[in-house]
Image: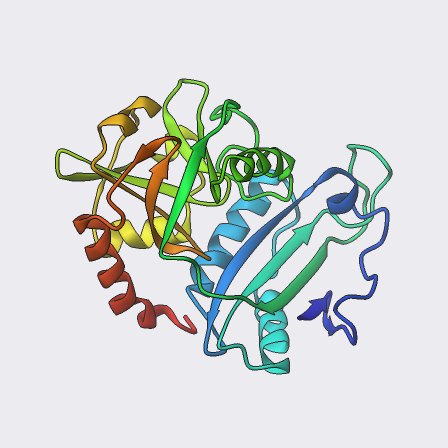
Length: 273
């Protein structure tokens, strides 16, 4: 693992670096992106930076210096060649008083690169009882306030699944803790709209652009009628779902298999872009 923080490559990525009063540490006042790395090149970095800028603006953080982020990316990827890995770009409110109010210090910007293994082609998901708030102040923003996801994912793993899926306050299908959901009903590929409160996933957007699908909000019970389901995310790409709670599904089904094929064919277009 290699880390860059506020303009310099850290000599030891595991050593203490962020101050104890950093607002990202004390109250989760920050935003982040996870970016896939393939053969030393970031995948769809420009799209991730655009979303990071939107998240920062939505949280009321100072404008992000995208050029500084790119310098950080170059520094950590230049330190070691990663055949497969991920970047974690974190931008916080910086040092602040020990409370919800922000201080007047400069934000903290960190870029970390680390290796990772390929995702399993098939997985299980579990529905959790806690809803996403599609009307909340953080809806649609990728923030560091992830405790809700931690609790949900722990519950999913207790039930033998690798991902937890939320409905929203309206009872409609929303998203996973770190993934977007696609499903097939009557031969049509569907996914929740952004109005559901789900994150505008980069992989989600590319699947819609490259492969297609209809954005629609439906009660989470629609999954009972789905003939196949897959998850998409930076670390999963397109991943078939074999079980949703106790229901078994074809994995991969024909639509999922074709989406995987198209993804593998098109992915090289955005390496280094």
